[in-house]
Image (cartoon, rainbow, N blue to C red; front, side, top):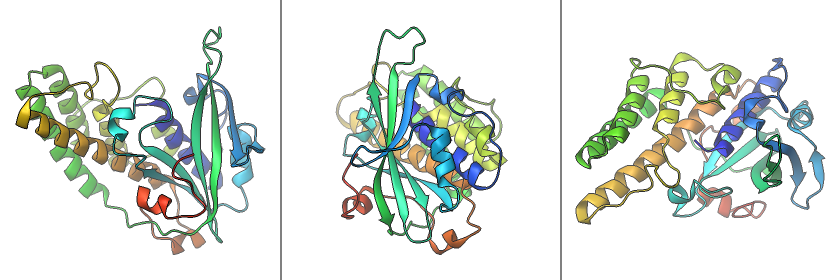
Length: 288
């Protein structure tokens, strides 16, 4: 899974932990999601610096923010295919929920010194792309419904992979399905301590690990990197887009289990954002 998604998930969990009064210990720059970041700053739309690192941003949320709610919005019709590229693919927006309207934050990655000895070649900037945001969030689906739908899609994609002679992918998707159904081994990555930071409950943890295992949307050699003839290609496109959408929805739902609606935030309807919601707001551009 792309690092920008790991970062959005981690920032959501870290912020909600801090706002709930938990001590998350060292975070920036030692957390593994920052392993390739030289700088990680927060600014407004004019470029004015608001926080010079994630710890200062987390501290700035205290007192006036009730929680961070992760949103996922379509950038364009090619999100799945473009997800391998920096600053492309699905948008991952952090909504800082406040009593009188939310702030929206979106990250952008800039390539720095590619020859850096410490391999910290990226500079990440999170921009506050909107303030006083009042759009309601749609009702989220239950983990049981998400799990059932994701399981069905993983089965169908695995069966298609077998039919297409791509047995290694069939194995990957069946491993993810086994995790989802509670019978598989844990799937993880070297950059992944989100489940611990988020203190995920078992059902959310299974959804997360299955989503991680099922995410194969990259460039050459990934599940994105195939095409077929005629009706078979149509099935591939439909199944792959369905899988992509299901996994994005699942990741958002899991991240938002860290949002504790124990304050005025309960007046908002919980759920996920759509590209239409963002495009209709005069405060929020189509993309940062």
